[in-house]
Image 1 (cartoon, one colour):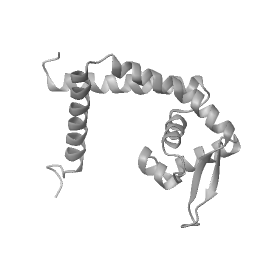
Image 2 (cartoon, helix red, strand yellow):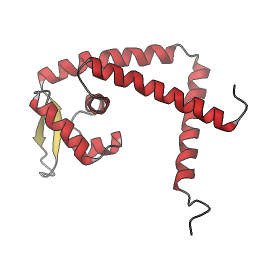
Image 3 (cartoon, rainbow, N blue to C red):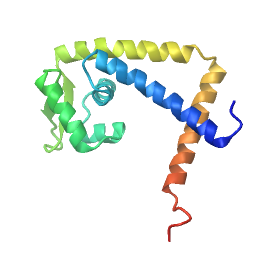
Image 4 (spheres, rainbow, N blue to C red):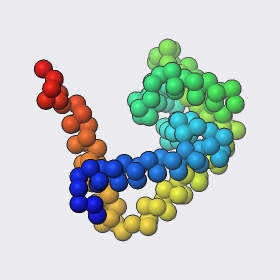
Length: 151
């Protein structure tokens, strides 16, 4: 373990970057971008969601989500269905081909994530989740607080 704070931060950030790179590499291997893979995974978990919901869940701007959705429609992976209660929003639904393709792509991701989590004991899993949540919340809180130079 590094003894200095900056070393710990760099090491943690390096681990996160390496983790993200593995998702990016996999996405590229199946002809997608990391963002498209994230959106595909979210639609798979939350079918009938809207583009607005995708923006909120994936923390992505509207134009990014819209571009990916247009491509998925063009590829005939999804269709947009007008919602009865709010005609301005459309529910995102998989086509039969899209559901099969998404399932094939995401199966490897899910299996990898499950294998990684299962490699940890239940106590390690709990500690990982607890400490990651705590670190993220602390970073978020610190970033939202005015800095000492702000007035």
